[in-house]
Length: 241
Image (cartoon, rainbow, N blue to C red; front, side, top):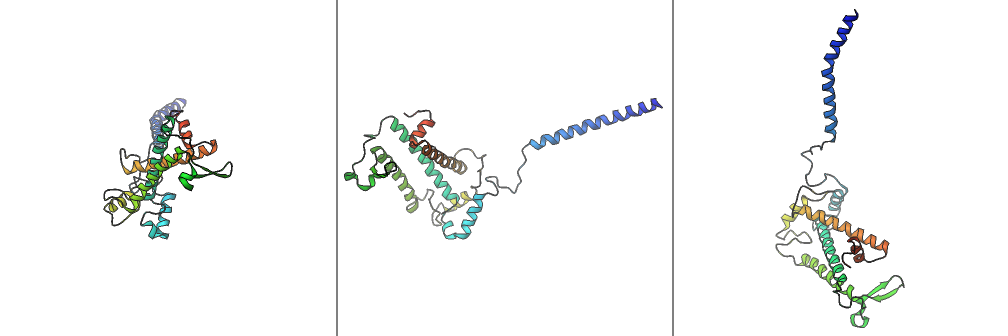
């Protein structure tokens, strides 16, 4: 009887061993598949997250203020693109200003403007002494450069070129259909990162990073009580001056 029980146990063990191995392999395969990237659903947009706070804001704005939304005013992809362009241009200007300041290219940079010669446009509020003072020659030059960029944006609104991207959406402009099609593929929390090279997705993402960078630089400069140009120079390891 003991021999019969031993033979039965041995037969049972040899029979269950392959099953246990198969079960272990199945469990391992299931565990590994949990860490594998899932295939996105076909109904999900490939260029943006399907739902986000920004998308809801754009929809609500369009329903409440259709007259403004049709021109691209308010929270819209058109406005985000242009805000990002201005932010990127702002970084170019600030880095250029830091370079020229470090190389002494501004004539009489620290000289204050004469109020009698320049008028009240040259005045600036002095927060420390709670009074007014005039801006320096360096600030005046930087201001003129920014005013030039501002008027470029104004020109893109009131007198856009036929082949250029307008600041506001205009149904009568030749680029209107292209703008609407482009804006419909953008937006969301993250754009399509698979798109490489010069394309609207890269422009949107670069503009967002530029806007966030300006906010960070401004906050850091306020905390450190220094100019944004000094902050940029500090972040670059005093590469400018």
